[in-house]
Length: 372
Image 1: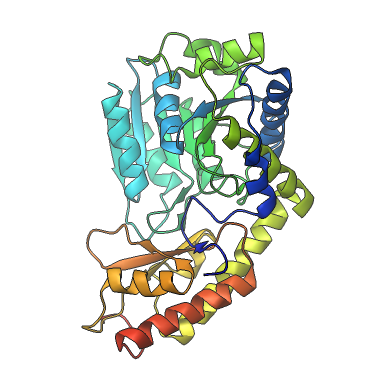
Image 2: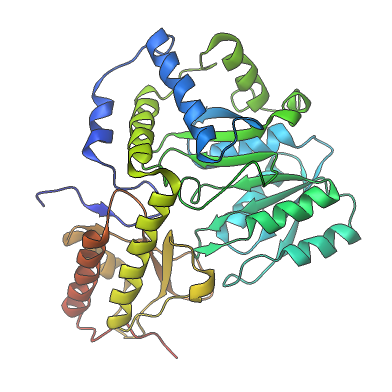
């Protein structure tokens, strides 16, 4: 290969050369110049969702799941009761980590191929007043379905419940406006739609609840309240920051701004998604989701019904042609996933479809038609 393979996954993603080059310099973690980069980055992340008046940004070392776990542990009192709206694998992970944090957790289940229902949430909260917080996955990348953030937020606000949003695969791409949508915590990460490299999560905490988070967390390293207080006081991270990841994200956010921000990023990803769906339809692949609920982030496809199909062989054939696909997350059906996000455009998506067609030919499979 004369270029890096293109990552058609929900993160890590393909990054630009500018973002990669930003990591070639070493930084002192207490250095004033590095602290200034952190401060500017925190401000720019708030701007993405118009949150400067209502929220603060607390960055945290580690993958996005670290920050989801930190949010639950920091925001929810130890006597709290968390309701997780569950229509996929990452929802189930949120429920599991909530229980492991020692918080009471309940699950409101929905079909994997449908968005969660704000009306069902409303009815549940009317029945069970003990719920204190709701967890919503904005884009459930187990399937690619977009969940109704604004509607869920309205229900939570009406019932006086806290809302924790996992916006890992939506932040920077799907519209989120903190001036109109109330949430206690919204979690995202560096290696997703902002097109940085993995290694840093961040949490937008509502200013009105920051003080009430004190003492909730049972973790030293993942206490968002302590991280926020220390950063405001010193401008520094409490513990060794992922310096190269931070400066790479700062560079990626600058490119995000130059591109035109969230609307432009959404437009490019939507075009990627359409190009992918059109190309795969020509190969007779069938998407798992209806078009109306498909977010332009990652697409789940049914596996071909042909007896020669084997995902590992299919994956290897696509990889040999320069594209990294992603396995399915469903338990009942055999599927695979193709991401539409990252520093890629229409041409790369067309090349990806061509690679899939070549992989099928190599395996002796006429087309991607699934089982009936």
